[in-house]
Image (cartoon, rainbow, N blue to C red; front, side, top):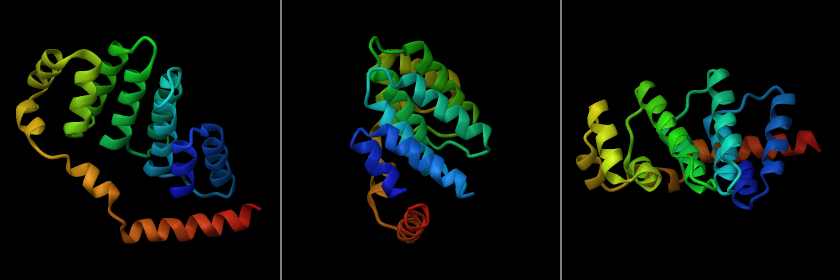
Length: 167
């Protein structure tokens, strides 16, 4: 995960794509974090929204279930598009809800940036999501993603091993 994340953060989406391809050729199946890093990289460019959306669709077609972090990255890509892609963002939000994923505060902030707070609140009300309650919470996902876990340590070990095998 970390090598792909670094590529995406540095704006080297092509490198992140190549890394994902190497993983697949080595018969290692990418997980939601692998795809999420690529989606996040695309989210930072004005024209990356199509690619972010395609990666999410590819991920889910391979039975890798999206999480709120991946969906939020796609929503950010729609926000950063020139012009912003509000219709696509609403469809993405509704798709996320249809997969029984509970939006967090970051998702709702992205939606507010994309379509406005009143419209986001209305979408939430129609879906049975308590907009005001979620917006009042501190963002738990952010805290959890910044904490090092045993999974992260194992991911680093696998990444180093893969890097040696692919040289």
